[in-house]
Amino acid sequence: MSNPRLSGRRLQALRAQVWARSPDKRCRLCGDPVQLGYHQNHALAYQIAHHTPLAHGGTDDLTNLAVVHRICNLRKGHGWRPTDSRIW
Ligand SMILES: [Zn+2]
Image (cartoon, rainbow, N blue to C red; front, side, top):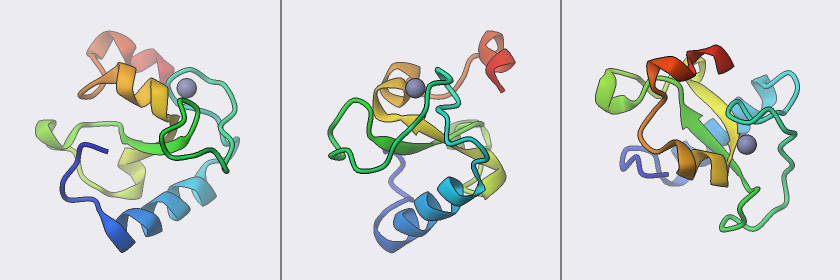
């Protein structure tokens, strides 16, 4: 995560909560299943991503966080563009 405000125990807690809230455990960016157990540097590792980026007024609230693959999160860069909103 590039978000400096999310780290340590808070990040771990949020990861667990976002995972628990996800109904299908699918990546919100590509739609494929996300699995736990990958090394954190693996392309398919589970990460949480902000729907609305913090830089655009988003928060760390659970409603603004989603399950994604690490590689998808990296490709996404800083947030979704308006044209990508259909994936939500
Ligand atoms: Zn993905």
